[in-house]
Length: 173
Length: 186
Image 1 (cartoon, one colour):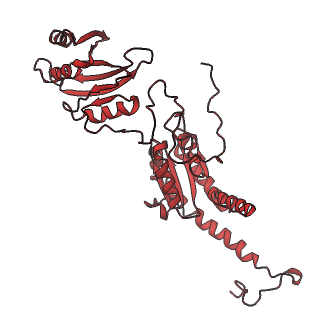
Image 2 (cartoon, one colour):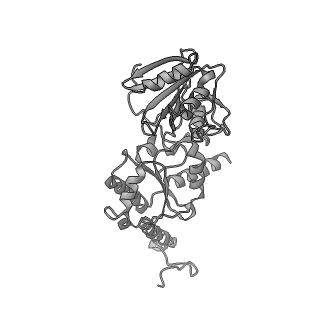
Image 3 (cartoon, helix red, strand yellow):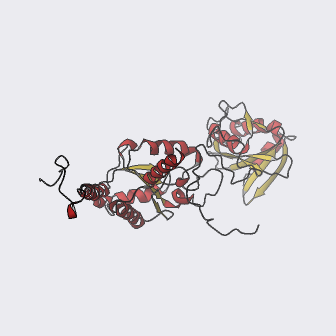
């Protein structure tokens, strides 16, 4: 549906676009991390694209893959109604990504959430703190190597509470 | 009137002329207080999640919690008798919940409203407290996701029965256990 946008980005950043695909009418363009900020700036400010609405920013962990993380950005144009998804890979050993807060102030909390849950540091972010969890929390819980039931309580758990039966029988994995 | 308190006069003789039966004063006063308490439960609502909608329904005219003398929410825990924990409690909310509970005057009761507050619900993960009794003593557990107002009223009536029977709250039980343990140790 937005092949026009993909072609525009490809012609503007021939080196920067690693891949693009279309899934049921949703186009995705995968860009190099070095070009991520410029690609997004181009999409936002160029009159031919005018992707003026920052819809969502999130992150995906691929533990077996290099680079390990994907930062996923969803954009929409109010003028043309087109949508585009921009992805960029972030390696684990250099877990940083340019911040979009200079383009959309709304990116602030999205990037804080991505940092909170995945540990991706957004360079240039004015206030990169945890947003949902608390400062004392160690680790980033949506990383696949975080044990999902590892709890970090802030008040001591009472040991005289009646033991809770497991809600469901254990299933073989 | 003359029979209410005869302690200054030594009290009336008990059956067989034994010890004066001062006991009847307290055994009659306790049910009276229990009756008064169970029909005037001031509540503090610790509301965090979608269960709140059912809680509001329960308080409003159709189900009308006021019929049970429990219609007044106090916006300070210091004036409340019952702490309603309505919704999912995450570990980040643990310290506020504990602090609010500690501010309440005794006797105090706690109701876990809904499955999340009771056992953590289906949030068996890093963020969620697996039932508020991991943090504070809890008297009544109302299951449901969320519970219907009928269930809520059933829970409220259970609490009233418990108070009316003169049972100790979980808080009082624990205080007594602690005192007994300290006595043994000391």
